[in-house]
Amino acid sequence: MSDQTQMVTLGCRLNIHESHVMQDLATKAGLEKAIIVNTCAVTSEAERQARQTIRRLRKDNPEAFIIVTGCAVQLRPEVFGKMPEVNRVLGNDIKLKASSFAKDFPYRVAVGPIERQISEDFPLLKKFEGKTRAFVQVQNGCDHRCAFCNIPFARGSSRSVPLGLVVQQVQWLHQSGVKEVIFTGVDLTSYGKGLPGDLTLGRMLRRVLMQVPAMDRFRLSSLDSIEIDEELFHLLAHEPRLLPHLHLSLQAGSNAILKAMRRRHLREESIDFCKRLLKERPDYALGADFIVGFPGETEEMFQETMDLVDECRLSHLHVFPFSARPGTLAFKMEDKVPGPVIKERAARLRQKAKQALDQKLGQYLGQQVDILMEENNTGYTKDFLRVAVQNAGASSCVPGQILRVTIQDRAPQGLVGILDETDTQGYA
Image 1: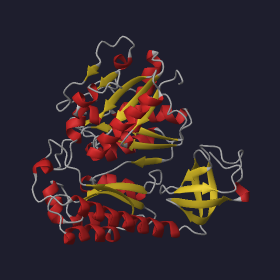
Image 2: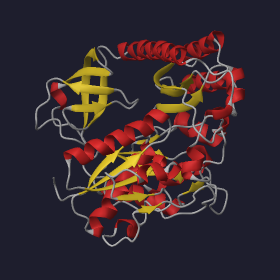
Image 3: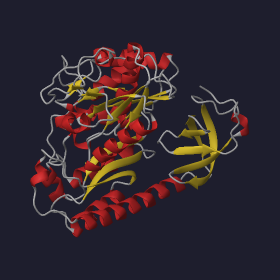
Image 4: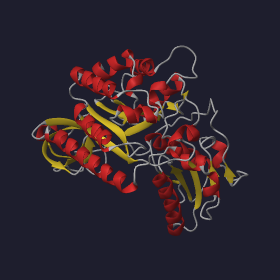
């Protein structure tokens, strides 16, 4: 295997950002033949996949120095500490510290308490290796206690990256050639907690937009719609540098289930938000997370979730079969939905999602769109639809260029486009 540190990232967009930071720290520390596995704990299946991945990596790389970290490790350090395939186990509390990747780090398992962590190091990246889009952490942790979620126990309390560091990070990434920034965190709309003054997510965005005018493509990862204030809503609706794609943490379409989940919104509020945003800016593509089979969910309640997809005009869904996580309120709830029923409902909602996305894709047939090129002759529209360019040449489809294409057909999970002859050079 290569002497260069390799990353294996499982889970969320925040993990992607952190993996790039860890790879940079490990490289600077001089680790050789190292593989860092950044795990996820959102479901029991995610934990199983993490263990399976570690075993496969050891089998394929017998000489590797394997470091395991992430949310699954933070919650179950004893499980990963007992795996003979693992050389070092790092908790979320120290995984972004340079000393954790030193060759002479004194501990094999180093996982400390994180539930009450209120501050941390926020290392910056000079570049986002090989990428035209970069994930930028602006927040970590969560102060909410939804009944199904164990992430607050893995990530700790809500805390925010200081504004000056956010601005500096975006400036550095732009200077390195990054064309698009996605701000990410566990609970983005809580940005500002722990910082002096009255900073909010909307105010932070305004400052970044003002101080880094050369970066003209920004996205936000998952938001809690009930916590979007008027200042942030105005930016979402009217700021052209905020691209028209938004993923919402909705979780269910039934008020009874939302209450049992200890969510902070009602079905009607989700519908009102989506309708209001689409009225102001019809080009938005909206997505959402949904949990299927939460305890007590009836067929009628599930149908309310199915109907919500249409009422909110959602086109991108992440469907999670309910997974009872130890330590959460839902773990002890009665009236569990049988496994086969959960599986069947998840399949129906995924089919609904496929139909909704196909309808969205169909609206682009014959249209001219600008796409940000990435690798393998593919790019993404402003509303985050993947486009494969059929007549792409090596000289015309350089990653980082923005090209104009005409959409010819649908493709699995995306579109097929033809590069316009008048735009063979593209533009930065």
